[in-house]
Length: 256
Image (cartoon, rainbow, N blue to C red; front, side, top):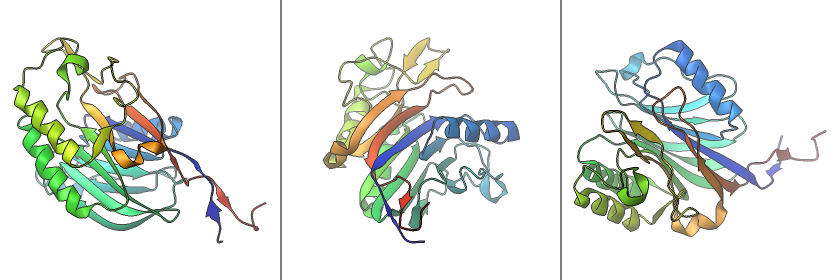
C-alpha cells in the first residue's frame, strides 16, 4: 500500500550494555527500548563473538546491524531499528574488531547514515580520528553518530572531579576531529553549562559523561530534546535525543 509519512519525532537511544550473551539481558534490553519508545537504538559492548552471536531481535525490533569481535566475547556494537521505522538499507560497513558499524539507507525517502561506535580505553583520540575518516567516505544524508567514546570531551563539565587522568591532548584532538566532521554533541548544545553523567567509576570514585549522540551542525534545526537516563542494569546510563523526522504513521486513502 502506497502512502506518505507525516512529520514526527525520531527517538535516538544509545547505551553501553556491558554484555548481552545472557538471554535475560537481551530480553531486558528489547523491553527497555520499547518502553522508552526508541526508534533507533545504538548499542555498545554486546560482547558477541564472530558468527556465533545470539539473535538480538523480536517483533518490536525486527531489524539489526552488527559488528562483532572475531575471536573473543568483547567489544561489539549494534544498531537496532524499531518496526515503526520504515528503514530501507542501502549499504553497511562493519569494523572487523567490533568497534563500529555504519549503515546507510532511507526513512520515508530521506537518506540517513547511522553509525555506532565503541572506543577503546586507550588512545581514544586516534580511534575517533580514524573512525571519522572512514565514516566521511561512507556517509550520505543526515548522519547520526552515537556511542561510548571512553572519553570526557570537556573534563571541567563532564567529570565530577572536573579533571581527567588522560592527557589534555586527547580531548583537544578528539574535539578537533568532531569539528572537522561538522558534528555537534546533541546533549551539550542545549545544556552548555550543565553537569550530568553517564558513567560511574568505582575505581576512581569519579562520575563522567562518556556516552554521546552527535548530529551534523547543519541539521541541528531538527533537534527536539535530549537527556540522560539513570543507570540501572548496566554501569552506563542510556542517553537519548529526539529529532524531527518523517516518521509518523503511513497516510493513504486506504487507511481506515
